[in-house]
Amino acid sequence: MNARTGLRSVAVVGGGPVALVSAVALKQALPDAEVTLTPAPVADDALADRFPLALPAVHAVLARIGMPRELLLARGVARARYASAFADWSRDGAEWMVGDDAAATLAEGRVAALWLRARVARERVPPFHALVPACVAAAAGIADAQVEPALHLDPARMVQALRSIGGQAGVRFAEALTDADLVIDASGPARLLTANRAFEDWRDAVPGVRVAFAAADADPGSCDRYRATARGWQATWPGVRVEAGGDGIAIAPGRLSETFAGRVVALGDAAVQPGPLGRMGFTLALGQLALLLELLPACDPEPLLQAEYNRRAGLQADRMRDFLGLHYHGGGRTQGPFWHQFRDTSRPPSLDRLLAQFARRGQVVPADEELVQRDAWTAVLLGQGIWPARPDPIALSVSPAEAARLINDLVARLAALDYIA
Image (cartoon, rainbow, N blue to C red; front, side, top):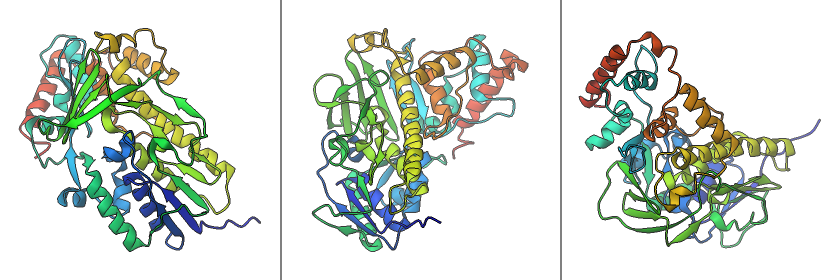
C-alpha cells in the first residue's frame, strides 16, 4: 500500500495580493506545514496585483481566509462594483452594460428570450441591462443595493490586511527562497520560477495592447466605464484612467500550457495574463487557488493530480479568454484601425462555436470551471447587436405583445427598487 505524506513545507514567491492570499490560504489549509513568503517586486504589467478585482464566483475563497465581502466593504479594503458600461462599442452606437449579478427572473421563461421575443417584433422594450438588478443599481448610483457585487480591492490595504492575517496564522516572511515540498510562483509576468515553460499566445482572441494608466478625473462610482476608440479603448476605474492602444506598458495575453509541473505551481499573472479589459487577473488567480486547495498535492509529485489540476485550470482560463474575446469579436465596434484587425483574424474554435450557437439559437451553454455569470455572456452578445436567428421555443408560447408587457412590468419594478432595495 502506498503511503501519502502530506505537505510539510510551502514556499511562495511574490510581493502583491496574489502571493499573500496564496500564502495565507495554504497556511490555514495546512496548519502543521511551514509556509514561507519570499517577496518579489510587483511589476508594472502585473495587473492582477496592481488592480485586483474579485467577481462573485470567487468571494468564497476570500471568506475562507477570514475576508468575507461584508468585512472588506466595511473596513474600506474593498468597494462594490455592480456593473461595467460600454460606449461606442455596439453596432447602433447605443451604450450597453454588463452586470456582476444575474438578471431578474420571470416565471414565463428566460428573461433574455422574452426580451428578444418582444424586441424582434419591434415592441417597445428598454435595453436588456435594464433587467439586471446590478446594472439598475449602478445606473441609479445606489451604494448598498442588495445584489452580489464584484469587489474592487485596494491593493495596498489588501496587502496590509493579508500580512496581518498571515502573521497571526504563522506565515513566515523570508528574504531568500527556501527549499519546500511545494513552491508557488506568484511573481507576476516575470515568472521568476516558471519562465522556461511553454506559453500559449491568446492574441487570436484577446489582442495584445499597450496600456497606460493615469489618475482618474472623476469617480465612476460602482460602474466601470469603457469607451471604444479608433485606436483601442479607454476606461475609468476607481481612481484610475486607462488608455488601451497607443503608448504604455505592453501586455501580451496568454497562459502557461502547464501551470503545475514538478513542485512548482504558477498563480496569478505568472500563470495567466488575460489583459486589462475587465480586470480579470485576480479573479482567475483566486479561481485557480481554489482548485489548488481542492486538489491539494502530497509531499511527493503526483502526475495524475497535476494533470487534473492543469486540465481544470486550463479550462477556467480558456473560458475567460473566450468571454473577453467576445468583446472584440462580437462585431459591435468595427470602425478604426484597432478594430479592423478582427475582420480576418481566426478565432479559437471554442469561441467560434459559442458565437455560432448564440447566433442560431440564442443559447450560451454553461461550461465547467465557469467564473462569469451566464447573464453576463448574454449581455455582451446582445449589447453588440448579435440576435439569434431562431426564437426560444418556450418564448414562442408568449405573444410579442405579452412578452413586452411582462418585460416592461419587470423593468418598472426594478426601477422602483422592488428587487434591490
